[in-house]
Image (cartoon, rainbow, N blue to C red; front, side, top):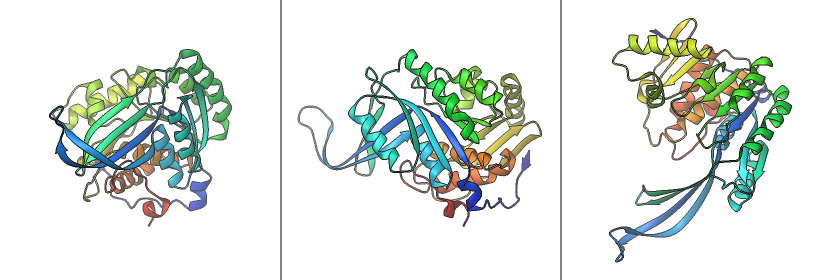
Length: 317
């Protein structure tokens, strides 16, 4: 296995500012309710949480786009939301960040909300509110996608399995014919829908669902390269938590070790990694050259609580 030990590139700020990434996928509103737990309910053996603080953050593909803009690049966000309070709250949060939003609206759709109740420094409960968008609305997103495509240097599909990417095959075909780099954060066990993308970025668990578990690096290498060939991908980037990450491409494989630091929270680390790769590729950097920087960004973000981001100054100190 090849290890990269070279110093990561430094990309001039102007080069990052001129990079445009089109993020397409499932957006969600992350709500956090913080409270004190002083007693157990007399009605059932559950803690009573007295809520004293609420917080709202843009989640899913919106968090990916936010990661792109905090690095100093430009991001457009294409998604489908409901005609509800959560969608307007989400749009307001996203608008503050400088992301260009293109939201399709469906009155029958519930905007995905993940509500986490936190007490005594830990998550006590998570409530998910969601349903699946209609196919007609998703089809209309393809024409918006075609219109936005020429203005962007890379396309990033953020799949959370919520139904927003039902037409991903058509979109990949359009992006491929326009010679745009296509990055996919995959979901589920059927990766055929990502065929002809440039790169997919599964974590260990996600890749195991597709190629089975491996007992050694040779088995992993063989199966990853077989999958890459089957799907006609330029590369597969496997994110491996404390083991760093490995890129499998036509030249073989390239591994970067994790940057040793205190881990507070791995939430959203995958979002940061793919957003960094996409911003750099849109800025004209090769996948192999972008790898150490994406690894560095992932290492920085796990040292922060919740879905966090990395700035240009942190990535290029």
